Length: 297
Image 1 (cartoon, rainbow, N blue to C red):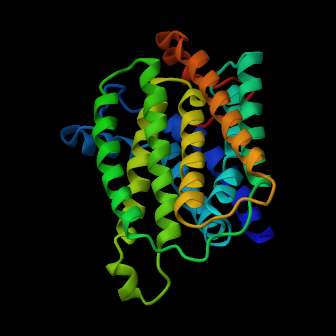
Image 2 (image 1 turned 60 degrees about the vertical axis):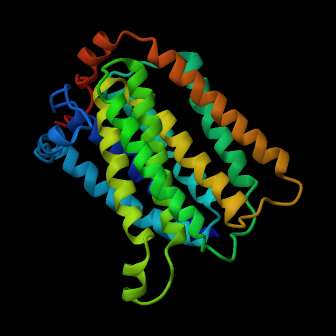
């Protein structure tokens, strides 16, 4: 368990740094970008021209390698709670480098989200013995279709609420990555290639990555990241306990439910306070790097 948790925390650091670089790269692409098949190729091509975005992509891939280790060794909710520490890394860097200003209430909400996720981690029991669940695989596929449709609709708006919604949908997408990773069957390459989860995994990751990039264009890094982290943590946690036989420690069910509640409330507070900020001024200041910080462009 120590190796798995260490891998999850290492992934959290890489994901937290990558979020800032992804924001820098995403905001250099025209803000009229949408999750539309007719515009998607141009949007992705624009992203790939940004060095900061390419660096974020490399860090995310390295982070996923560590995350993969955690997902194969830990219950889903413990692996996800570990990487959720990336929210703290992202929030700290965003205030330092991206001119995101958080009030005392918002910082309290960030701490609350992390405390709630910590309760989930402490409540973790043993990983379920079996990961095969064909119904869940079908659910992941249907979920990806729904996420893509809702993401296309949300991407038509530049409002702060769209930032939160796109971040939330990205969180569901990354939840699909975690669930698909857990459902991967051990065996030969041929067996792996015949498994639907071998395909839902990269599709979930690519869709979530694009949705998160669109969210970062429209509002603050914290507003985009908080719902993403919350949903990519809570969704696999629930799936692991309810469907994949992950266990909660004896006597810790109240702690697990409390962690879930604190995380949800903290995320809602952040979304509420960040989404009412002026999106125009937010957009104007989000790409300015403070003089005392390093130049990420």
